[in-house]
Image 1 (cartoon, rainbow, N blue to C red):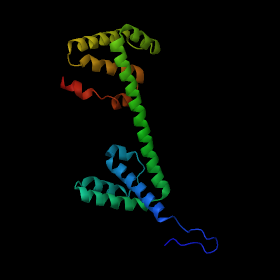
Image 2: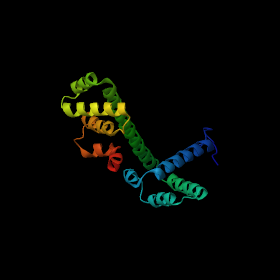
Image 3: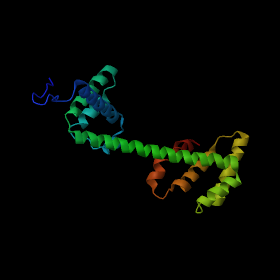
Image 4: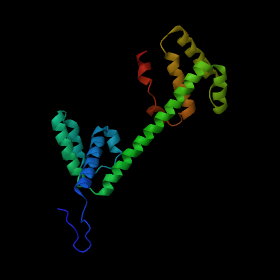
Length: 192
């Protein structure tokens, strides 16, 4: 029981509602950790004692048993220090910020692709002013091919190639990691 301090009359600890809110926050953190891939989880500072509980929760697929195991994981995580929990939350927030930035960059590339296909040479000149190191001939050829595909209703092969070329120009494909992480069309071309 909470009780009151006899001298000051203040409550001695957090209220029951506050404890419940904190427990639900830890449960949400546990859900987020379980949903991560093993590679993503490796980047989060999770204590060694918690990892087996996360793996066990992933392994269980039955709905009720999964919820029960998730609650057990959250109970184990509530025993951790506030600093450890905050470090895990911070790592997850950084991951979501990075993915939002990636998505925004891809949306800019898609917007330029649409602008090039619809606007033609004027839009290409504008892009080349912003990125003078881009391959003018290759971009012009890809834009023309994409426009031709659009007119004829053909599969968007050049349209995808134009996206990859623009991504390399606008986002810089100098370090292979970023280009690989953003390569969403690779599987489509492997089938052709």
